[in-house]
Image 1 (spheres, rainbow, N blue to C red):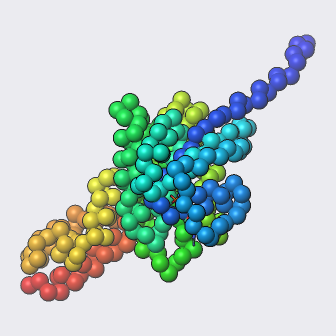
Image 2 (image 1 turned 90 degrees about the vertical axis):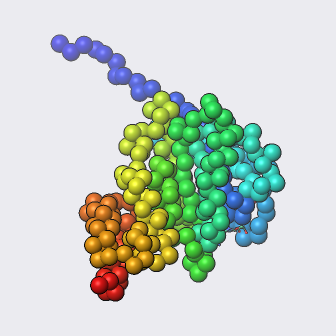
Image 3 (image 1 turned 60 degrees about the vertical axis):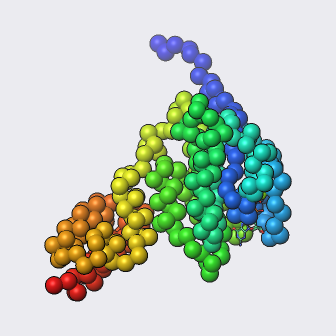
Length: 274
Ligand code: GTP
Ligand code: MG
């Protein structure tokens, strides 16, 4: 005989409160990205954030209701004293640069450094979800930081990466959705990043080599040999790079282009080397 057990009532998942901040140089589009997501609109006139803008929004992730406190920071150095106290107790960071402003991309490291400094020695950046927004992708004519460069920087640090335009809305909902899901995953995982996201699927050596190749000034420099090196030296250097970057072996963003550039550099050099 079957026991008359009442059906198990499904416990509603607990609601969650999270704190999210935006970071990045002035005018890269931090406020516009947030406005596009929360208010579904875009303002083309630049209205600099003064210190901090604060807002609350509710989102649903799986069966949880998430209350998001968003602190939108001013990017201008002038507001450092105002924003520095807002870094603490953050679960998610939206790190923004403008794909048409190389300076704003190069500044990402100093934004991380500022946050690290403010969190102090007890602060742990490993339990925070970072999403990098390569913003203003609608301005194709002015673009100077390409996708693989941005993606390489982000993924080599274990950060999420999205190409966005606050103007057209491209990438914005996908970015926020993935961002919030990752934060909830992190909270449910006891504040640790789930291991799958913890490490990049490529090595630091591969990332650094791709960056070095991109910035090399000529074919000698690209292969890492002295100008006038012998055929053997060129071939040896080439083989080392080919093993490191071969598309079958390396999944780092930009590895395919770097590999092609190395092949071309070797061909060009061997034409002239006796
Ligand atoms: P601060 O508050 O000073 O730190 O700047 P911010 O990063 O918040 O920049 P904000 O969102 O105010 O945008 C700066 C300017 O860039 C404004 O004129 C926006 O209209 C423009 N802008 C923002 N996002 C985009 C975008 O995706 N495409 C284009 N074309 N313009 C954008
Ligand atoms: Mg702003």
